[in-house]
Image (cartoon, rainbow, N blue to C red; front, side, top):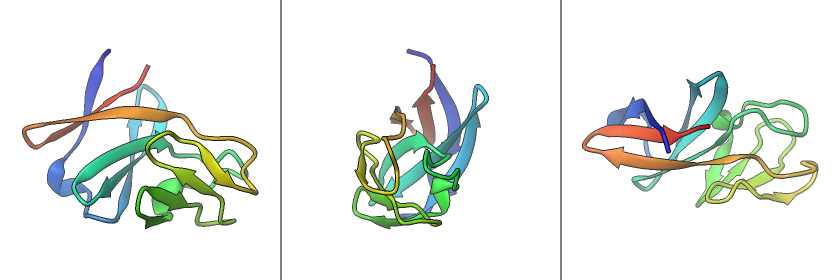
Length: 102
């Protein structure tokens, strides 16, 4: 595993997301009550930026068409998304947020 620093703890407010780019991959990084989750940012339905979506617990709602994705696994929970999103492992080391992206 090759974890890469993408942000610091203060960069992502609780209940919000932020787009980061790692190895050419756009990643949506979310802060859920101090726990960080990362999934592929571009929605597989029509390409919406998922980091802009609203959160309901560990579920992000696509800002364009309402598809829902589980932040812990990347699984899609309802249409119109045809499939899930890639999910990435996140670590916090001190105040650095690190993501494992292949």
